[in-house]
Image 1 (spheres, rainbow, N blue to C red):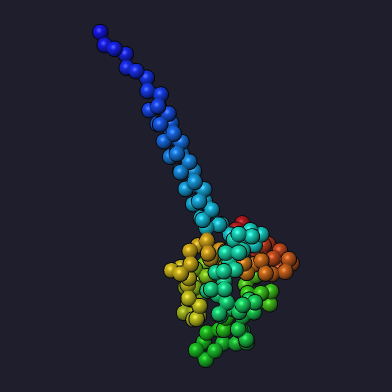
Image 2 (image 1 turned 180 degrees about the vertical axis):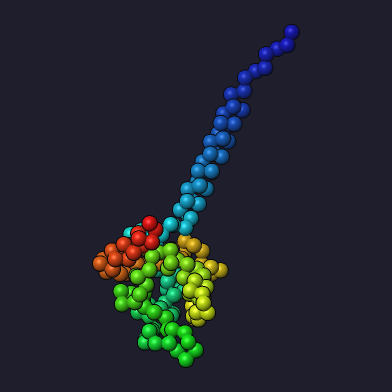
Length: 163
């Protein structure tokens, strides 16, 4: 006759503890990835996104578009090489006339690629420099600096583009 195997509560508890650790790590990784994933739009009401955008703008955009989003002087007049100076991103410019997805593509791919038809621009695409979250963040920062009426107008333009 065989003897019954002794129960091993310690081994069972160890297995349950290990499973709990694996679940906790998986949940933590999922949470981190969801926080670092690119948002679906440039949300100027998200303080974390705007703060990241301020840093991205300062490092990658301000040298051409101005620390205060003012753009280069005489930005509507083409240079001798056919390119336009960097436009302002404040309320005096035309940035707010475009939906978020268009602004995102212009930033990621560059104006020449988005406009096509031989359009020339000194602005590069930032796809190899900034990730999607950083691009959305820079746009959120720009939008956060607009007056409420301009933000509302751009929001309507953006909503219309998504319909």
